[in-house]
Length: 138
Image (cartoon, rainbow, N blue to C red; front, side):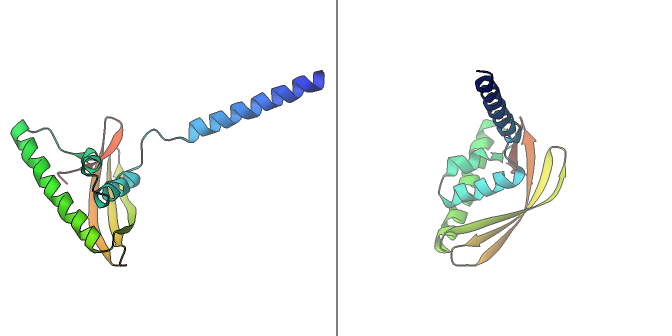
């Protein structure tokens, strides 16, 4: 009986430890690098709404917001078309260049399905309401 209780207690402690390790290791907000990767993958997959959700457009008048989203849509379409013509998106390489508080700078290189690479340049991300987004103004 005592052996059974010791085994049950050890099993409970092992399960509790596992739950704590998982909880502590889980990030509540994706990293700046993963946001950039998700952004380009969304464009490559023609998931414009998903891509737009990862971009911060500062508060502007409603008429300007509509125009800004229209311009963004055109840019996404051009990039999506280029990715498609180049055999799809093979990979997105990111390198964090700097981070100060709620601002990060990520260098981005895309590799297409045909093997060609495009250095997309630096992307500035800001943390708004606890999540990283690409700053459209930068």
